[in-house]
Image (cartoon, rainbow, N blue to C red; front, side):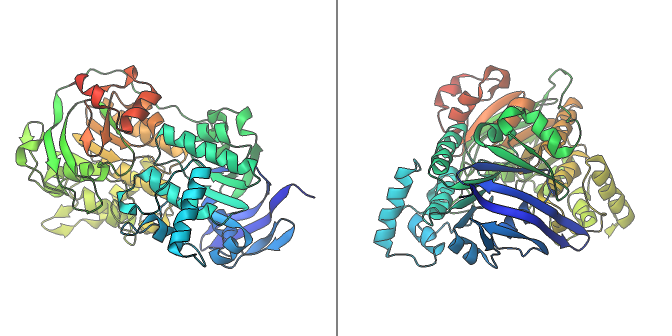
Length: 507
């Protein structure tokens, strides 16, 4: 018997103007953890959508356990034993764990029997879950467990995982990896997509590397460094972000005892958040998703108003000012959600550049839009940040996630803010794009701006931040010099073990 579970031969998929997959071929063996690597826009998402039945290939064929496999829908894929955990959760917050799991099943058993099965499977695989808990009350890590358990109840032969650790602490990552290794040991094959190359090296048996829709290499991840893997993905030498040492300046952004109720019933209220960010420094704020990051960015950007004296920019009270007034003064922000919040999906890149750049780039004249200047601004962003797009008149939704992220971050940086607050600046972004974004943030700080980076990527925060604070249940720990901390300490602080850190004041 062959040890190959899924064989992919010559899969091709074209969209207008884009060849997403070009004759892709590779095998996934039974019981192996196989990495699928590539830059943003390399064709990974299209490929796994074809495997899962969301997209039909134009050419090529697949065989599953030696039999022809051509799913016309996710229902057919699941029936054949293929399950997928998506990068974005597909859960209803107002429903319980068991109700959410039932919605993902073709023929769910009675709720009591299902709850028993959820407890049984979750405990077996080291992912404990209470079936009766409301999903809106769960942490990001627990929500991911719901998605995984929903898949495991199908007893899949192939489990596809897309960026599964982007919302987890290091401790939760270890639990997940132990679960995946156990599944592989029991014969389940896993196709694993991640931009975190150290994780790929620690977990995966083999890797297939895509570039511009084609397979450009195969590797044993454990035999190569993360840098070597990244350079295989991008096809060139990878730059290492660096920042020349610069003296810390005066306080630019001053937040004092900021408490705000979350507008969402499942959000996290801010509780007496206090911090000072100086000119020329990067303050890194770490936290597991759902601990107040969105609320903090909204409060600092002006989307949520605060007491006037709770937020000061260069000594000026801005708590009661809206986003446009804060931008005029030099306080800019880039939220986590790219499509729908940071950018309007159906608007062009020129229009999206205008939306936040109108004031500081002087793109309006007596109420009329200076469209030529707006287009020129969009072109500068595209060129400076290597945004892969045919041109500024294309819609934001036409860009890959990583390229849209480069556009959004670049749009704010090129406005030369006094203070910039960004949430998840490199989430879901490939190694080369992440390095470029981090370098741009470090350059901005070196030029004298105060930068706040909210991120769940601990390696990122360790690399670029001068000081670190943890956000947990809406409370912010006292910032500490990043150089004094280990990744394990930061992970524990993110998980809530930072009460002891309050004594460490670095202002």
